[in-house]
Each structure stands twice: as C-alpha cells, then as structure tokens.
Length: 146
Image (cartoon, rainbow, N blue to C red; front, side, top):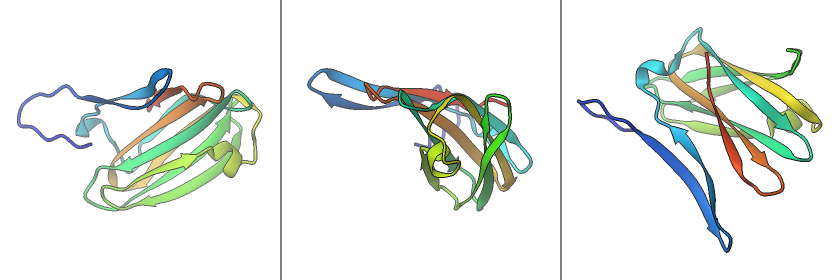
C-alpha cells in the first residue's frame, strides 16, 4: 500500500485471517520513502528460524521508479553464509521468498539465523521477514534494520 501526502502522515497496516477461534495476523509499520534502501545499502533481518516449530518468509519490495536488484545473504547465528539469492524487481514489484532457508540452503533445523539484504542497483527498496509459528500459524513481523 502506497500513501502519498503533502503533510505528515502516520501509517501502518495489519494483514489478518479469521477462523472459528478468532483472527490472527501481523502488523507492518509504515516506512517513509527516505528510509528505503538504495544502491549500496544493506539491511539486516534478525531472529529468523526454520525448524519444526517455526518457518521464515522474506519479502522484498521495490517502491522506486526504476528496476532494482537485491542480493539476499542467508546466514546462521555465527554469521556463516548458508546461501545467496539474487532478485531483480521491476518498479512497484514485490516478491516473498517462502522458506528460503529450506529452498536455497537446504536447511530445516535452524533455531537462530538472519539475513542481509543488499541493494546492488536501484532505490526505494524495502524488506521484511515473517517468522511463523508452525503450530498456530501466528506470524511475527521482523522489520529491516540498518
């Protein structure tokens, strides 16, 4: 969701599902255009896990007007590189990598890991992770940090 205004705005969103027991979902904070990543910038996604209890998804979004290229390094808790994933994103494009530690590193036994998302071209890039409880399907939003 993109919001444009000529005055200060505070924005956020919650994506959720409803079932017989109630709703569950996750909140995503609004991010100012000035805080998006550009060529040469790197953001970290911490406290990721991929195991019998939790699964991780990583999302990248290009809010810019030109194509952007990102490199996602998947790392274990000690910083050892497990896999690298490159993605090209058209303007306005979003991609979510479902369980990248399984799909790209072949690992499903990580209780602590992180990702480094680097922009190699373009600007206006945002990223996030979602760590989902496999038993309840309750997600936790992991915002990008620099």
